[in-house]
Length: 254
Ligand code: 13P
Figure 1 (cartoon, rainbow, N blue to C red):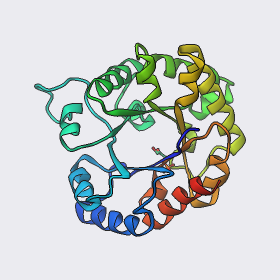
Figure 2 (figure 1 turned 30 degrees about the horizontal axis):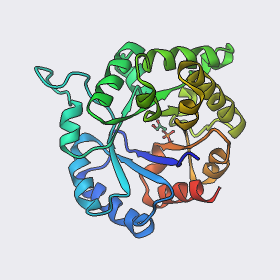
Figure 3 (figure 1 turned 90 degrees about the vertical axis):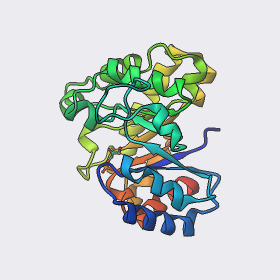
Figure 4 (figure 1 turned 45 degrees about the horizontal axis):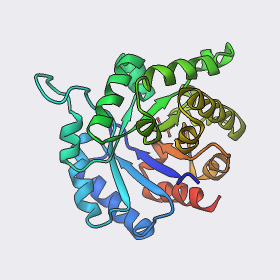
């Protein structure tokens, strides 16, 4: 059984004060949750505040939204895996479509970051997903295969198992237009099939695959009830603690 993982990707939002208020509210509802893994992904500037607000609630994990692949050095404006570990961060999102399209990240760059994350025992959440044009041309499987093989190249079986994949169709991100549960399940099944080709069956079975793209309290349950959908990576709806809590509970109820 794969433990479901629901993560709040705040993107470039949330001040320290807003983050602390969010966590206080979250703890009232999810302070003792253990059956679902809950992850908060604040901007770098709010990570320490979120940690502080979580206090002893070690069941809720914190992640970063990006990092550089080098350990240290002259990389002005960048953050390394070691610096994130210094803040007791557990997860890091890599290859988000916004990084790929707005900041030119290729599969090769994502792969360097994924390897660096594992070296530092940070767990990567690796995002893949097609554009609408690619879907319309019937290229979903091809794109997912290229992104997965490129981004996850050279990982050991153990590292692969500890990697979380997020399927985020680009056309569903921030558009209010989510993939249907059937479309999402089909893509997740293909992702697991590709993982089976890259590693052994047992390893592929253990990898958790989140769905992301306009997840809301109203569609979360049906999406996460699909056999290969192991959680959600939530953007807009994760900025409001009430809707995020509802999404987490939807993962629990299905
Ligand atoms: P939305 O939930 O706002 O569509 O964003 C999805 C996303 O990009 C999560 O990483």
